[in-house]
Length: 295
Image 1 (spheres, rainbow, N blue to C red):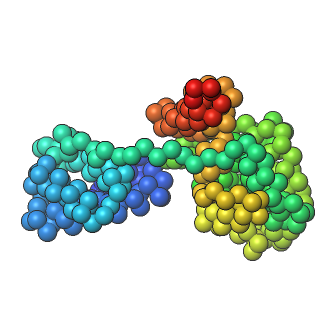
Image 2 (cartoon, one colour):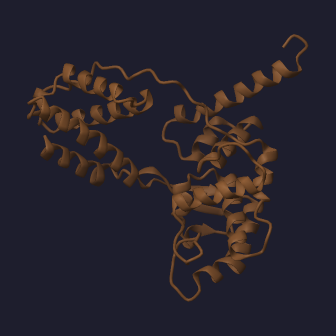
Image 3 (cartoon, rainbow, N blue to C red):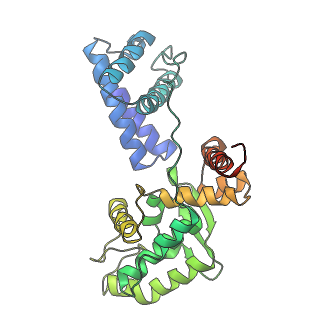
């Protein structure tokens, strides 16, 4: 089974081009699953029955794993067993009739337009780091990029003269994203007056750099936005994707087409984008309760 797992992970890497984070999650979930099967003396794919799969999912529940995490694990198991079946390593798929655990739908946390303005204005100085942070925040809110896409941007990915950038999303999928005049202005200031002081005489192709002149990491960005949110007096729990969620929600609030938002976010499936329509509906309900005479 371990050999088949290695073949599967190689298939995901070479054929599907999944991101490193996704591959790591698949590997972690499936290694735990294969270990469980081996404990149960199931050494061949055809010995992995639906009962064993359910027992494994039950063990995850007992260990305290959330329904959302168990649903994600089941997706990995289904993909793994479909691969085994397609490649002739198994005769049946034991996951085909197993339903995903019911998950509570958690709405994305967003900022109000006023809170966004406060956050964007938080880096008030003209130091290289202030210029960098203003450019990052403005760009995120203007484009809805994932943070991993933001920190992965190269200077060569920008087309400032036409106002677009090239983003590389999950699985290396490429998309062209418009930036807007405000973000363009902040980017030009950063490129002209901020980035040269950070990169100094080193060679680094990444757009956003830390104080040492190295490419910024996702964790580094999280620390920055947390600190700037406190500086702006925002008490909400900010996550790396808060500006992405706010971008999508504010577009829909102002009448943007769902398909257009899907394209800009880089979602492969529109059902992923539809979570933001729930946010706007919840806001309408709160507004109705607040101002309607019979609310």
